Length: 339
Image (cartoon, helix red, strand yellow):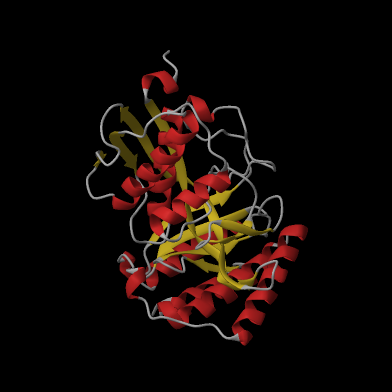
């Protein structure tokens, strides 16, 4: 096999997520207000990328298939500039090919997944592996804000507009069963059209309290407390999102004995959270699915969060080297046949 650095061909991959467990405005280590979020990971959908360098061509001659992925093209151009400098080569053009099956506009990180996969593919074409911090900086430059999909570690509070970790909240999430659904009929959400909102000091105090409670939930494996935090965060997000089905969703969660609900704060995807160790969880999940159907809320996918050691697919430069510190929390579905 020809090494990626010699062939000029690289590949990359990035997963998606299922919206947020917590999102708001928090204080960083210097006491400065900072927008932040904690995502709910989900295995399955993701973005793959292949980048083929064309040495000798102008750096601006970058094409993308399928056409129209402007954020991914910007990310590839930024990555080419950074990687060419590291490799001591002049930047050049190339072709970026993207594949994936993440629904667009639902708040599952489709654009960030494209961007990260593109950056990783470009780096791989130079035989390089960029640190998660570098990938995050490039992603923010490409799309102004990004999800923490470049981090292969445990749950973090992530400053999405700055591309940095505000706090590592714990080694992993407790196991969850998530009944996924979409609000608003699954129509994509135009985040740029959402009403502007300026949090005050009371909002920051409330989000800091939720942050502390989530930290405790992860330290103790308390699914019930995690569900309370996610529900409170989702409810606070309704002053911007205003989902008409939100009250029905929380009522269903209470009626079937779920731990709580979570939503995408910049999209339409939502989830009802269950403790897999709770008595009669299969019966509760089935009851939840029936109730969602009765209220006209489309169910999408029931999945679980389980820690694995599976290595994400990337090119040769990404395999087996320079992995970030901390436990691997890539996710796959648990063996729950009844679900």
